[in-house]
Image: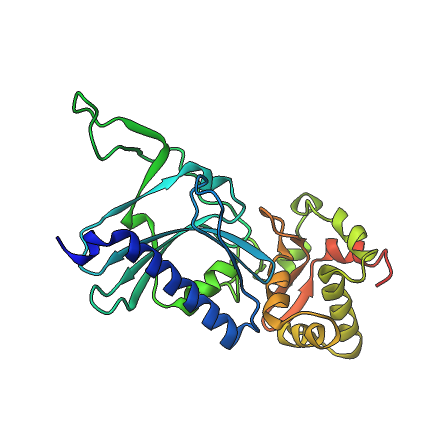
Length: 284
């Protein structure tokens, strides 16, 4: 029997601690010690750790396999899908050194729940009953390895977990031109009512991002994202990564995003005309 089989529980905890350590180290070096980590008292909701950074809370189910393992699937509890940003991180590590070689990620962007797993294959018990039948486990689903996304470094995984500098998605957040956004209709904006609420909360980050944009716009021919983030981090509380995360939630009405306010044209930062009409009604 190999060491990995004989001491599997020991190894499981060791890998978990090493993983948390890597996240905390990265938080120390690059993210102003903003990461918080917690453990559930009871393990019945399909996750091993809870991590929070830049206002994003992730419930993570951890899996681990060494590089030469033949494992091709993982089992996940359906309750993980109830969490707002639940996800699975499958750690691939070197069998001898325990060095992390790759991460496999199953989940959605920050703020979005786990992709639906209801229709995935129902797992079965590994051992049969007295009749030799392996009964189904109705609360457990099987996710094949091919359904996971490969992430090659802990830094890239950190960015994915906490929505730091995510890639633009042209169909949701960035019109190809100003003409496209002019042709948007009021039906494309389902969260405009929030602008009135933000206007009355000067301590709130959505308020401060809009205020910062308006102040920069009044003194410059155009505003870019770096200038806005620099302005907010200098004049208000919060790290730059936190401001970027909040800004990204103001580019779409989808899911748990804050609302469709900003878009870019080239390197210029703009506000949708429908959102601007609402913003201009209030004092900032």
